[in-house]
Length: 447
Image: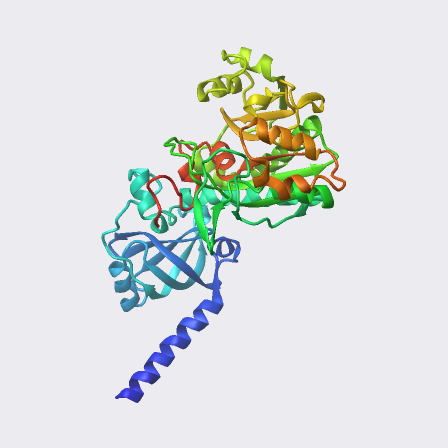
């Protein structure tokens, strides 16, 4: 009896293995000539029965295929299997590709055999349909299941293209991708919004930015960029903030405020152009209709704050950022030459004067929100120490950083863009958490 069971299991295992090797994606099946036998593997998206006909809509990462069981063409045992399947179960389906004017996409598959790989429980904890009415917090609780939704997948296909396009752009511009540390000994940008960690016998922090490291590297390899995580221990609760983010961080030697802003403009143009060209299906699914390749609009801080209805010497409120973007719809609004007192210690003061009221720092607004801050950095050790003191920080905590500018550091500039935030803008999402695979905020540490 045992030997018979082992033989049966070996046969089943072989059958599954062979099916895996033969499997094609739905997108490939649509390109297949009618009459050819194929094997599809994916999730049961829907099942419908109409007397002697049963429809199984199979979904994989590339799309959906209508699979049809029809008496007497489909074997009786296979016909019965269709009725017993539950939505989101994982199956392999073998059948013949057929032309069909009634089927979505003009083709369907006549079912010859079905193999159930893993049955989903009948009662799903969230609605995974295209028009899910499940609230976002509940969907995030079951994010692994929410990722079954084509709309959710579309967001991250767009995000993947955004990340890839940034990389291609900077590789083409001869930048080197760097890998800075993400456990640090002191604040990268001042302030106290850091997550502490116990690092052996020392106290460390999760990096809020690779700022200091990308500067040190730009002063040797000239052009550096990274796409990696950052953590901000800020107790906010908004639709555009999370506490763990992915940042595209850029730094370049022999750049100033003006040229580094232009680099940001060109990179975002390149990204949006690629998304428009390569993510048409995803943008349509997300209902994105007015996305265009943006132009850069350059405004002095004082002009910009007046246009937005704010006060000189203060930061923009979210409402003012939105108002300014509405004045220049679809474009990137650069507000440059900000007051030194509201920019980080490492931003170059105008005229290399430690007491200068104006800095060489800027913000970039796009889609109604800030997507980036940056500017020319201080490359002079003594000036940097003075600015650190002016911000109420202790230069001793930044000694290795200050020392790195004592041995031939050129003028340099840089900026950073949050990957999730630019995804939110491009995809037209109401909440940044939708653009984050597994969000981390004040209350969420799982899944």
